Image (cartoon, rainbow, N blue to C red; front, side, top):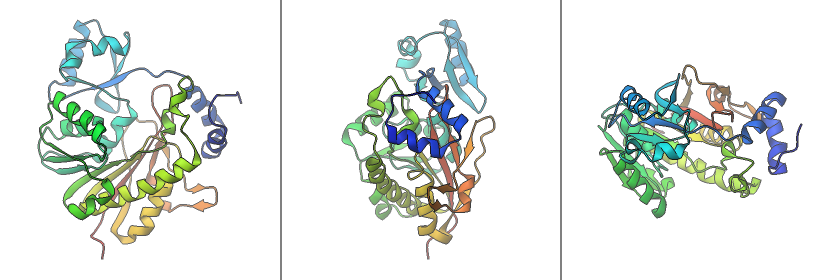
Length: 318
């Protein structure tokens, strides 16, 4: 195995999370710059129409089999796309492919009420608004004033009108809006291991197992709050951009024990998406068997590492 400039403790853990072959592929992915990817903002333009306009500008793209509105930028740098009116006027949203997955799994429908509990800077919020055709209601919450500023700017540029922005600690929202939403997205702050890039130390210099422990605590209570905010029968999607089992399977295992009869894990289907199943064991911890239904996206030349769990709230807690 070749030497790579990432935290040693992280690499020791990675060897235990994935197979030897996957480990080598992931290290390769961490050393490569991924192509730029984006989606058509269907509130303003269809994917077909956007493709035509890009061709007329000499910009080549490739379509994504599992998401009809997503594209890979082929023949020009991202900067060129960002200089077009299509970008400046919000017809295009630059977003990593992995980040587009949680809203697709959540599948918000027109006229539903949807919670995005840690929404800024709004990539997934704007995507959900487009899927919902600007109908219904999205509550986009983020406790950071600075990040909310970016969130509001993105919503405005993309022409989103069904979204209300709030600034609460997400962990406390359940007190304000119990069982109010049809669906909830819980895309939590995480240790971002899925986005490590060897040539950019900023992506990994803050990493530590201590930070993971700190984050897990927040993640659990954000998820629990979102479940309380969701109506019985509703769907909650929990996602991270990390590989750490404590932040992924560990959080889901914890919530299954806490909420017992209230929730169950659902199968995830997105044909064409390369996925791995959730881990059923980490170190000495054996996880709930439902966790086999969860998906992991391993870092590759095209995709960041991601984790997605789909939870159904079966009933109100007794």
